[in-house]
Length: 205
Image (cartoon, rainbow, N blue to C red; front, side, top):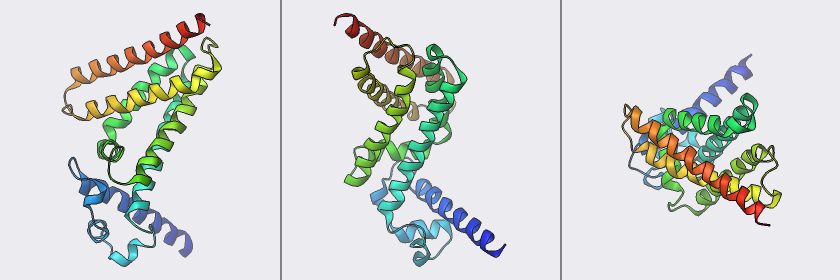
């Protein structure tokens, strides 16, 4: 029982450190602007206790990327299970933007670090986006209208579009519902154009 309580406390502190880092970064700061001592203090622990959860701030950042990427892969899979291929991508985009809206600090972090100063975190974000695209490609195999060799390329382009539009989405006010709907529709239109281009490319071969 004591071991279970200790493990649960460790998980809570681990999550609290991640959330504390996101809160401290807010809308403006990058991960490189934070110190380990600052994050530990925000989480309510002494700096030495930080090392029980992460080797350094870089590892904390990599963990944030993993959590974001893993959740989005789940969103893509859930959307595929809830709709036929014709509507799955639209569902995916809707779920994606809902996740962005509910995790603004996390996506601010991703948007900044995608072109930020830490090479390992930039590489991790690229790997994560590629993994999301691989999950998305499962939807694109269903209609069998797109050449197999083009599916991964097209899905990676769609993921890039969504992450780019997520940055614009975050710049909207939290109550700008009309503008949010327009941006989602614009994203869906761009994704459809990727499909149309891929299908037309097949017909020309």
